[in-house]
Length: 140
Image (cartoon, rainbow, N blue to C red; front, side, top):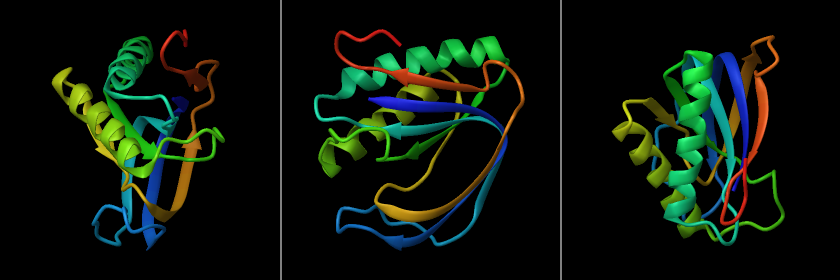
């Protein structure tokens, strides 16, 4: 799994069109979340629920360091050429959401399988942009 973690002033996304039959059902409405970690997340071929646990553990540490308690999990297939299948990807993303909620994190998740408009503003500090490479045998 690869995650481009961005500490943002805001993120806005709006589902435009389904990209695949496995796309989640969702409303075509604009969503805006302020002061959060935007997690542009690519689920890779060998990722599973244990990868979701490891990812949220890493994110939780970042949240504590940045004094933020809000994340947006945003499916983003553009960080790897070794993608998991859509069913696995959606399962892992939902598991990340579940684990984060259990840890008391405010979680928002953009719909899987959609073309979306995306706007955000990255905060200007040294930890505002980080790449996480999470998976079996990997350190972030």
